[in-house]
Image (cartoon, rainbow, N blue to C red):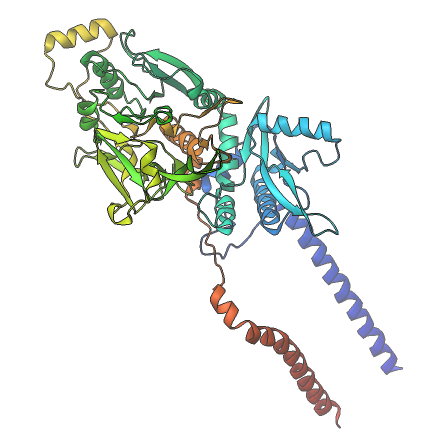
Length: 573
């Protein structure tokens, strides 16, 4: 009887413990729905949002709807990008709550061909770039091309903007490109939300009056600016002064001489804390001129040297050649009466890259240039100088005047002549700029300036300003196709299927000049790509296969033997 009561008591104890354990598990799951915590043990803090991003999400006052077009049967790399995007947006929900809503869609998967094409055209019109993917047909050995859209649309109130998730892969290993794409996900989504939240869009002044382009070659730059900023034109030759309401000015390929009056207007705008992006072609070199028998590139005589020198930079009278260059079609021979045309690298079309981790150029792909000039920075002056874009480590300068023709491409470049390394083409200047006209104009001239502009002459900047100085205007210009009209910037008309990072560089630069976006710091996020040593894997493949097969089985057998031995000792008596 005592034995039976003991068994009943034990059963009750086991039941109580089981119910208590179930209750604890249920309570933990309920608490987990309200409280979120995760320990990020990665060295680069891969799964931790930046403080600025967390603050941005907590302050949302309306729902943000995100449509991601990465649902479907994709190769492993795109599935990885899709999973990383989902994990990031789930992390966004932890701080944004119900104000962050997202869905994953397969663009046009269930639509007829005609409707699918129309929907995909809509995505491209929104700014989402397609990617041509080769996939294997089910049950077949052949491959078919499939157009996918690795992007998203972010909607906030009555506004929306597109986000391209896949980083271009020019000159980059595909795994590294996907890794860089993952590293930029937080910045891209946080920046999109931040831009949509702004009630006042920054005002950009597109400068005219010195022969700047207004036609199709600047179409994409102005269209891109209109999507994110307020844009107005300013004729420097006719306006008495530049209004300080402009958050930044944009100079793109002026071709006429700047007078002292013009430079005074620019200088006094800078003294008010104004910001400027200069995209200059000091020499008369253009792609259109290549269609003839050749040309000589000479100085445009812009007379901007003294102004830029005072601010800390100088665009030189030269052209750069680089062994890392974009292509141009060239007749390399004839087959019968038909010419054989092949794409060949043209040394005057350097592909530029970054040598530092500044937010404007962090994780940036190659940037396409055309007849770029070098940019030097001047020491001193209290101005911070940052080199943004440079040539490769096999480049050289050619001083003006420069004789240029396609015939020179037919000769193989001699690598020994390309010994200069990382020549700057675009630089960033930051600080309180000194006035070019300090101690250069008298009291009467200062009074005249005040009567014309309504503002006193300033010998130095009131607040810190920023400038981007680039020795190539083609960084922000676009090619014009005879068939399709203006193309996107960064696209070679002879290779339209690939887009370089020109637009990304342009937008990052204008964003840095015009805003104090706290999410800009998230561009510095870097994910370490830890790849296996391919040669070591090849040599030790069999060894590691044996270890991977034998060790788990051996561990299980060893555990069974020890367990059986202990069991026999325990119950031997």
